[in-house]
Image 1 (cartoon, one colour):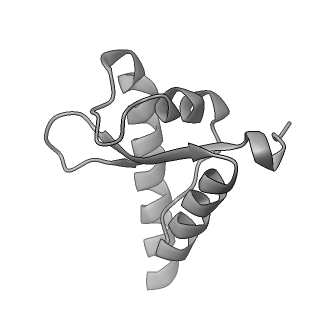
Image 2 (cartoon, helix red, strand yellow):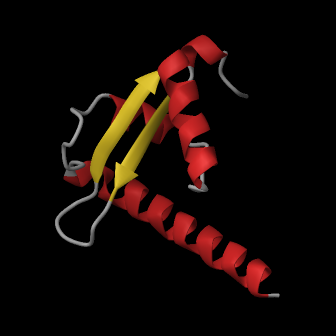
Length: 93
């Protein structure tokens, strides 16, 4: 069941291959909508995971994710990589 827009949360991560991924944007309501809109415009895969978005939205911006979120974030990064590879395969024919 999806949340009403006012309750929707979103978070954006950045991972450069060193250390843990970092939260680079997070918010709810209108801010969440804008994060999602910007991600779509940039071609960033978007995963609907309310529990993870809630946890990430509580972190400070630019904070490395805590160890207890590593597994969930790793699964999300693997998922995003697969989406990117699938899309690349479609583009190549």
